[in-house]
Amino acid sequence: MRIGLFGGSFDPVHNGHLIVARAAAERLALDQVRLVLARQQPFKAGRHGATAEDRLMMLRVAVRDDPILVVDECELHRSGASYTIDTLRELHAERLQDELVLLLGADAAHDLPTWKEAEAIPRLAAVVALTRPGVVVPEHPLIDEAIGVPPVDVSATGIRARCARGESITDLVPAAVARYIAERRLYREGV
Image (cartoon, rainbow, N blue to C red; front, side):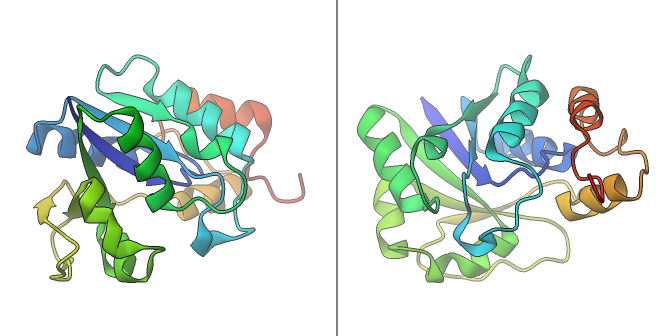
């Protein structure tokens, strides 16, 4: 199998994440894209708006009926910061017969050289930067290729801000995620 790995805090998962993951699957002929939920991203220490458990549940309801997108919770079973190199080593050992493709947004591609053991990443997975019009991905020996994905004007930060103001997010996240956020009163100021 050819498996894409698309990691993040997914705080919350939104339509942009899903559109980009599906586009990458199509463009790269991936059999599956695993959405790897970070327990604690090293660059976002202490800045998650929802617990890891809530973020996991939102991911699950978002992709429940999707044949290509799969939730991967391997990073939730490790304590401390979530490092891509550790995840790749674990998945590579479990899936020796599969080809792993690490999918990075343009911002992450810029930061890649600063990641823990970045130079070891290409030995475990092909590295593909996902770019949108007007965004330049750096040329770097760690990045195998860059592919264009649909431009989607949505961000988790913006969604959290809308929730805090009591505004609707129904056009930004899957309906099941919007219901989950409302029921759990996530991202509300003073809650």
